[in-house]
Amino acid sequence: MTTSSSRRAALALGSNQGNRLENLQGAVDALAETDGVEIAAVSGVFETDPVGGPQQPDYLNAVVVVLTTLSARELLGRAHEIEQRFGRVRAERWGPRTLDVDIVAVGDELVDEPDLVVPHPRAAERAFVLLPWLDADPDAALPGRGPIADLLTRLERSGVRSRSDLSLHREPAS
Image 1: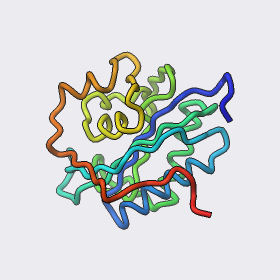
Image 2: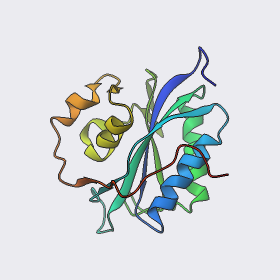
Image 3: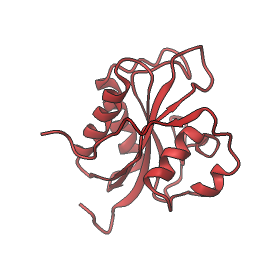
């Protein structure tokens, strides 16, 4: 699918309800099945303390790097479809969820709309996004902010733990 109009995009995945690993794998599979999206890399799995919101279980997080011809708006629509497939309920901000699919960056595209901001406005402050992204794409940079590796030098990482005993697969099981 690599074409002159495709660009790299990073999507952050998170789950702290139900079978967290199955939820993340389901999101990877659904992205792989999306027209106009090709999986380029999938990070390792990280377990993270919840940030903000009510008291809740720890999250599993990962980042998927894709090549896509879709716009950020089209990716958002697909992300919401995938979240709904896994029973996502938007009851409270930063509350527990079966699946969260956040668009972190789409090439150099800049979007500032009420329901979509790209690059993600808090990505540079979130080790639970940047560590998996660095794992998936060591040369990645957050548009307007710089290399992920440099951004991570300013962040506390104690709430983010690599789970080398868990992994996600790039291609859906046949």
